[in-house]
Image (cartoon, rainbow, N blue to C red; front, side, top):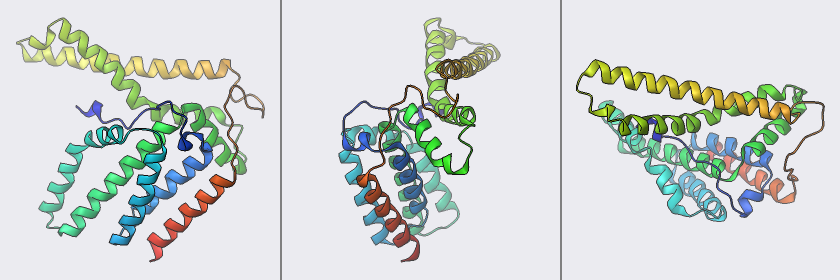
Length: 244
């Protein structure tokens, strides 16, 4: 099912990656995803894979978790291979496309597994602060909630489908009735997901989120020397991948 294709959720840990500043993690994710789009040599692959592997190990999350995340996209990998074969692309192009998708999935999973929703909000605010739009925190909140929608929707639709199974509606012999029940369930799941996200907005407003310039009830993490050095390393990797 397409609802299974949801990249990760936060996993509690005290790893070095979890402790990194949220702003750095967002910038790092953006830089590394851009880097994957410019892969054009085996040296690029080795360099990006080495950085990714070390990051995964330092995240304190078992590699099996990332493997499971990766396997959710097996259908998409198959589609990519078929499209490349139909368009008569070379083996090198097929492999580069697959590797790009692998890097994108794993880098994004690493970010979502080690960054809480509150940290995501904080990181985005710190990035847009120089643009003097920090007062529009509610807009940022809605944008971040949209990224949570697939996971919330999956949770809701799994519950509704379970109810259908328990009521044996899936054994309904008349096709039009079965379609009706499933359509109604999907619509109901969608509405419940939107309602849950709206409730999150009201809760954040009740906590005075977006009121004034001071932060409320957030875990702040200093952007230190470690983050600065890693950011420089990310930029160097991006520069090498693009220009060499």
